[in-house]
Length: 90
Image (cartoon, rainbow, N blue to C red; front, side, top):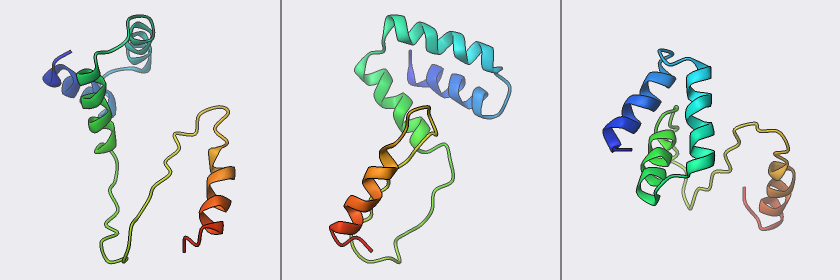
């Protein structure tokens, strides 16, 4: 897919003009056919910038985000939070 096609696909899904069943069909095709590295990188960048972005520039130091989509079996927060606290993260 071209960047413009990915913009159209994801943009139309985010704004509600592409129904879930059509996105599900696309994702099934990706599961079987895969994506080129450039497609996946652009897809990921689109998703990364699709939500609300919180400005943390007033907080000194390095900031790290552990983002969850709420998928089934997503238990990483249970491990990540105590590890970060043990390493001194505020």
